[in-house]
Length: 356
Image 1: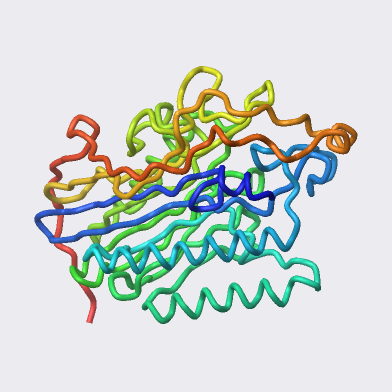
Image 2: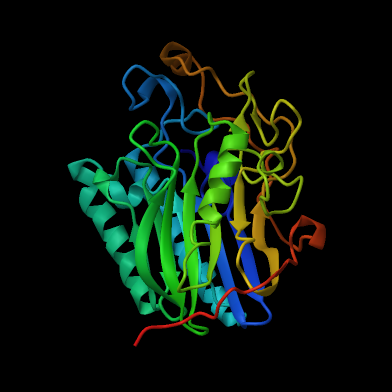
C-alpha cells in the first residue's frame, strides 16, 4: 500500500468512510450517538487471493499490501477511533458505540515475524479503550460468519447478552451481531446490531431481514426495546427500505467493470452502502434521528484505471497509480427530514421494568 493509496483512502485508511448517527427520544431523555466503519482487511490483489480457486482483489486499487504497511494502517485506524472518542467528549457529545466490520486485526494472526507487533498494537488499543471506560463484544472464530466487533461506552451501556441474526451455515457472508444493552442513564433497553451483509442477496429480501431484526424484540413482554442497526450493507441506500443517511453522498469506493475506481454504480447511483436503521415499532414518543459527523468520498464518476488482476500484467505495470484526482473525505453533518422517518410517534405498551 503506497502513500498515494493511503491518501486516496483518506483519514480512516479504508475504502469505506466512517458514518455516524444520533438517536434522541425527547420523552425518556434517551440519547445515543454511534458510528459504523468497515476497516478494510489486509489488502490483496487478484493474484494473491486467499480463497482457493478465486482471483479477486478485496480493494478497489487492486494492490497487494505487505505486513509492515498493513500494521501501520491498522495502528493509525485504531488511534483515530480513540481520537474520535476523545474529541466527542471534549465537544460534550460522547460516543456510545462503534460498529466495526472487516476486523482482521483482531481475528487473524500475521506471520511470526510480525505477530508480536500485531499483538502489541491490539493490546495497546484494548488498554487505551479501558482507560476511557470502553469495552468490546466480538464474534468468535467458531461462529462461521464474517467477524464483527462492537465497541461500547461502559458509562452509558451495560450489555446483557449477544445474539446472531440472518446468519446460517449456507451464507456466512450475511451476518448481523446484536448486543442487547441497558442504557444506564435511563434504564431503557437498547438493541445494537452490527451488520455486514451479502452483496449478492436480493435487496427486497435484505430489507425484510433488516426489518425483522428491528422488530425482533417487539413481542417482549418485560421491556420496551429501542433497536438500532448499522454497518456495511453492500447495497446502495436507495435500494434498502428505511435506510438512514444523507442521499447522494458516497460512503465507499469501488472498481467498475472497466477497471476504474469510482464512487458510482454503473446505474449512476452513488455508492451509499454504509447505513443505519432504527426501530419503528413499540417505541414511545418522538424519536429524532439524524446523520451525525459522517465522512464521504467526493462524487467522482471515474478516477484512475486499475490494472487487470493478472500476475503477468502486474509484473509489467506499476502499482503506483495516479490518484491525485482524489480528495480527502469531506466532513459534513446532515439532518434528515421528517418524511424520511425522522419523527415518528409510537404508543408505549408498557413501561420498562427492572428486576431487583
